Amino acid sequence: MKAILLAGGTGSRIWPLSVGTNKHLLPVYDKPMIYYPLTTLMLAGATEILLVTNPEAQLSMQKLIGDGSQWGIKIEYVIQDRPSGIPEAFLLAPSRFHGSPVALMLGDNLLYGMGLGESLRTHVGAEGAKIFAYQVANPSEYGIVELNQSNKPINIVEKPSKPTSNLAIPGLYFFDHSVFERAKELKPSPRGELEITDILNSYLCQNLLKVQILERGTAWLDTGTAESLLAAGEFVRVIEERQGLKIGCPEEVSLRVGLVTTAQFYDNLSNIPSGSYKKYLQSISI
Image (cartoon, one colour):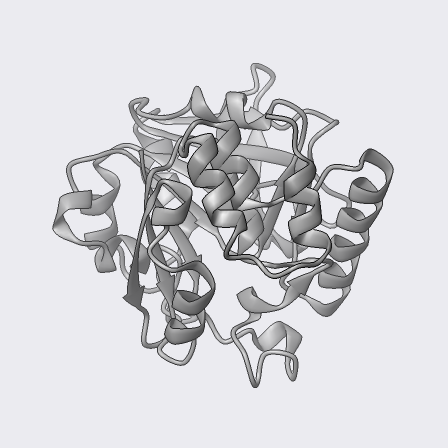
């Protein structure tokens, strides 16, 4: 599966933390933020990922992640010179992406839940678009989806001042190949950006948008503000310390889903310096 991972932007909501580095390289407890959405895409079946970032962060991203071959995937980089909205990623994607279904995930989103990977794999390649819904206490801060009594979407609004629903849309989307043509037809919104809600509404108008409400045992965290970044780090710390399992390790995920062999996994460990991260990976039962 092909996927796009958005890791650009200016990080204005967490300034000055983002002045000296791309926000997606900031720590969420014991790992860089970008590891969490990256491993979610790997669990969903992505083997070819286009990582969209800004010019200042490209070298640091490449130093951290490389080309993905160590994890059995292919990662390619593309530069977004200025933040012009989420759908611009489809315009930046190389032509070989255009004939295929694609997943898109925001680099500051963290999803965690039992069986999440298996669940996500069921959405790959379906006709139309598939999004998720997550109940929140502050829907006016997110894009929200309104459902009818049959749980079918009837309206999508970006950060409504008077929300008609408390179901926010997490930053993980599955689209068929038509999304690339739909993106070409978009016009900038009053704030000067292309809006993902316009893409979703184009599918909705054709009855091609499906929504799945995330189960209560699933956690979704948007780490785009200082408060949510701190909360996400604490969430990861608590889960890892109580369960003795780490979240968001691409080395482990690549082994678990069969992207690398056991020999390749141990070869990867030889390049990791001694510390708690390596010690955890060495403890994994294979």
